[in-house]
Length: 186
Image 1 (cartoon, one colour):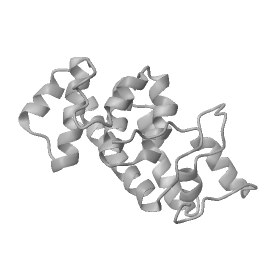
Image 2 (image 1 turned 90 degrees about the vertical axis):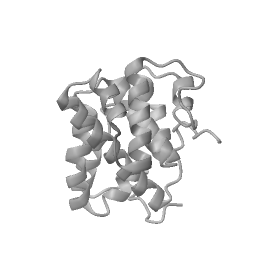
Image 3 (image 1 turned 30 degrees about the vertical axis):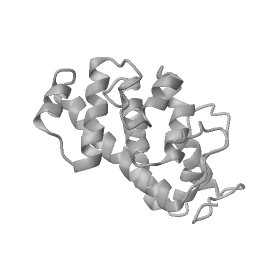
């Protein structure tokens, strides 16, 4: 049970319209609990929508790279809720395999999965950011070999955004979505 109860239908017309915007077109499920809790504060939800939708729908990183960053950032934060939502939907659409997704939850995500060099750089960068809130020069150089300045800026914002989302979902103690991918046991 979430610490703040998600809204339930019937929604106020303005909330209904906002929730429809937050969900992918043709989604086969109701708006996720995180969105329905956020709409207890519609002004905050509106401000968060701009950044969240911009990162997912208009980003410069390839979809697979974006989802690797999201999976690792949420896994490192212990956020099974958000990890499971992305693993079941956007990560699979981006081409990540179940084995790759599981690896993002492992202490060393490169131990049992062969990743592209740019993906190894992403995973290492997310780990450094999680552990230190900084990037070492070797981590930066590894990223720089694969990404342009605009993409590097986006990567830093993306990792931080999903750390924030993890704080939110974990702080609310959101139960997993019924259709989400279960977070692997460690």
